[in-house]
Image (cartoon, one colour):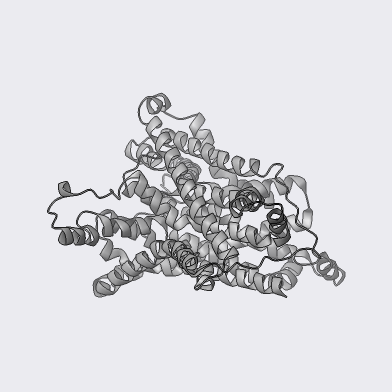
Length: 538
């Protein structure tokens, strides 16, 4: 049973690769000669820009709040996580509305300086590669910040003090000791940020950037060539595999051992001069203000102004669609995560472990790739079944899987299974094997042990997994945009459609609801960090 579930989860990837190598119409030479170089170059430049920005902001803020004490530091420790709550496409819509020629910022500048047209002054275009990089950095740097801060907290003060005694400067201690020791954790955070960059469609589409993600939609839906879309999707998978490989390669021979617990000392935070404190406070406030406070304030303002027109039966239906769909997907995903984790605990089989590991790679698969991978086998099943029923009984079954909510839930399950499995398996490992043995001695079956022993003890991990998957499903745009049934909209697709038509104010209420939902994992992360720090202090 577990092997079958793991195989079904891997089915989208297998389908994409198969159709890419055996397309009905091979347009790969045409793509290589025309649009592919532009797709690849833009994607690489986007990745380089986002990597640079997230590293600078994430590592810098993590080092400041970890090693320095200044007014507002306690607030910033968790506030720097707030941009997690805002999808990149939402912040792109907000800043475009603020910074475009007719927006309030440029209008104010023209009033101040007496400028009359765009020829009188220069203003950086928001809808550009640089603008997309900035938008993504503002919401993705928390990946690096979170893991870098955890790594800096685990470093012993004795190591850095020994370097100081040997005459190294503060800059040298950071670049030659602290940063290399935190490198593995930083690499993981950077890889996650870049995979989210590859998955983004709303921002690059709105800014008219020709990336591989946008190219998949152009070739698949614009040119109506599924094989070409699968070929671009496979190339995008190569980028993902390279990112995962680089992340693992960065940790080869990177073994740093901390002093024994008896010699492990937490470093006391430095208290710099007053002027320096203000500079540190400003440096950490900028990403919080730009990444959360400004976009959230704009959405709140628009939502209040347009509440009477936005709060209607259509909005309530769309909100119910999102909440219901995300709730069902969270239940299914967590249930599959529990099945895989418990099977791994029971059987302890190397082959099973390998399949479970492969099935957990869905989180690294971009939404457009996943959409193609799910639609291909589902459409094939529907077409073959329909043909069979026509030949045998003279009736048409229509679309049973593809183009239905079932297909969308399946796609969500594949994409977010790694999140649910990780949380569930972590809780499962904390339960002593003696609990299983005691249950078997008392005559309980494995299913009864799971229901009566493990699930009650794993309640916290299961709830966390369900909440995180629920929020991720609420924000998911690329796969939802392609796979949703006809006439079935979610909050994410609603915001995308209105914002694409320059109607951000009308979709602000939906975007604000997505942001408020996204605050749930931020709050959970903050509580988790605080709890761990309290345990360390004890």
